[in-house]
Length: 156
Image (tube, rainbow, N blue to C red; front, side, top):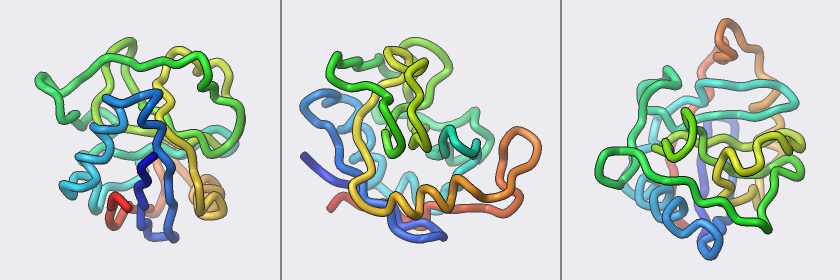
């Protein structure tokens, strides 16, 4: 399994990736991280007790592209992977097979997302940072009132 560390403006989050269960999604995430794609990108959507979402370089929740032709790619659901608690890493999407660069980390169990969002990893270290990010004050559209940034993302 590979790992990616997100150095955020609130601290480091290390993610363990499920390469065997979601190989295409993990490749997308690691290549985007290695290329600097996520550097200085904000967590644009934060919903307490639900999730923190980032990965959109426009910061609007409407942008971002994958490494694959056309910018979007298909879902990779696996029967062993479920949104059973906090710290689950999944792809954000706009419906079936629309994965790009946006991702979210759960702050609680979210079973209604099973087989709708590709799970491709979990927080290995830094869940306290995820919890702190999940508690920042937000405004319209669940956008944080003060930016919380991914300063850098690196494969470790």
